[in-house]
Image 1 (cartoon, rainbow, N blue to C red):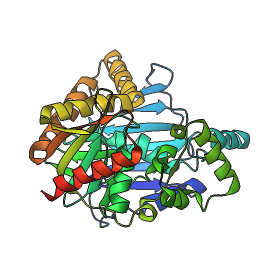
Image 2 (cartoon, helix red, strand yellow):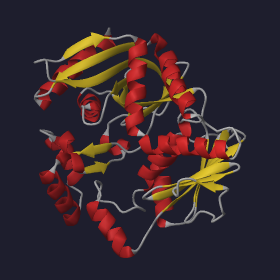
Image 3 (cartoon, helix red, strand yellow):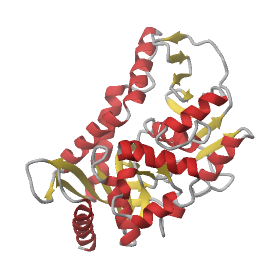
Length: 364
């Protein structure tokens, strides 16, 4: 995963089976391969007292730190400054709370059923920040003889474009929301189940049937109720093997990066070539808005490290510089563009025009 070797262990439980099923789609390394990070899913983390706790949701230890989130606790262990192990557990609550969490969630899942999402969002992707050669990119991606990334803020069309290119233009799925690249220009597939929102199904009856047809009556009621309120507050995570005809499980050379932006001053889509430095900086800025909670915990760990008269395991300032610099290095042989999208463009027109742009660029 992400160009590194992870050993994932779980206790024997319902949610552990769910997690192993989701991870089955990743390639498996040989038994004697050196492991970079061990990940343990536990039903409860050890209740050891911290050296410092500032604030109350961040515990500082000599060889790690623990973060307390709404739905999980995650503990990062270090060997020196190198991340070596992550332990996490889900905050389960009562049976009544589990029912309430399921109904009020975007996904119609309780916390245990969301373990795949929790693993990718709170464990796997944060671990990438601690590798010196990696950078995290907020983008969907396809593989077309090279990785093509679509970056931008939430709701700009990244997933819709990925769906269109994979399902209607026979491209290979590579990632839905986050891509990890190294400073040598390699991109690594993120096989976290794609998150399909209500707005992704506009004028797409085939996809709607694929997502909704097998759902139970309460699942359908939940979908329709929330979609009526706002299609941006309902989604379903779908196994990419079931969602797409083909997908990529191997690293690919970074071929192109498109940053998608909404623009109220234009009437039609405009493609502009941009400097790689600009593209890298734009990704850094978007990423800071996507991972603010984890970034806060990095700052709190740095704060506590100073109080403990110790060097921080990862400086926030150094991290953001490294993310920008590594991505810039990764883009050395890739094309970089901004795509300006009119605010009121018809969704089908957007997909048609963007598919034509991407296919033309990829073929030439």
